[in-house]
Length: 277
Image (cartoon, rainbow, N blue to C red; front, side, top):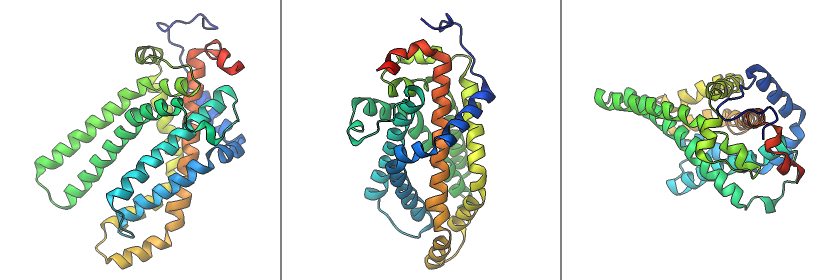
């Protein structure tokens, strides 16, 4: 069935550097498509970024009834953009409309996204935040150790879940895979995908080191709420515009890496029918 006669027992290794280069190239020569496909998800994500960061530094106080729905809405926005971008990369589909948002495909995709990406990342983030807080507050050593263990477990689980990541592009183009098949197909490529993901993340997050350092200072400095607010306002463009833009472009490249991984592992013949439609 595959164009090279490769079976799941004989994994097709993705070309690491070529996949990364092609993914960057594809995104940046299609920036206009990033805008037309992703403008609404980007606005939602930017609002979510503002709510989360403003809450952390004490610039504004939002209750859980606001922060939790906004966080979930941001995850939904990422998922919708990911489905549309996978279909654009793999199928060349450019018909993105409101009618395509409320589909069973998107519901399934968001379920995978919540379990395989959002919740593990949330667990790692919360564990690291508690480690910082517990260390600063001189909490009992046992609780700090427990936080370190939980953080380590979350990282391990996150890496293991990469083995199922072919579920994302397969679901997006309406050619779903079973869990076992997704696991088998990724054999021999999991660490390549992890390496590509982290390299892309490093490239995009390096420019964000200064604003992130400043954000950490805002969270830990012993100053009045008003002083923190003034300091935060001065950096508002970096937190609400620059950071979401870079993260959104990074998301586009990462989705493209995963799409190219799917194409390489599954072979062109695996999606010809969907492409033709």
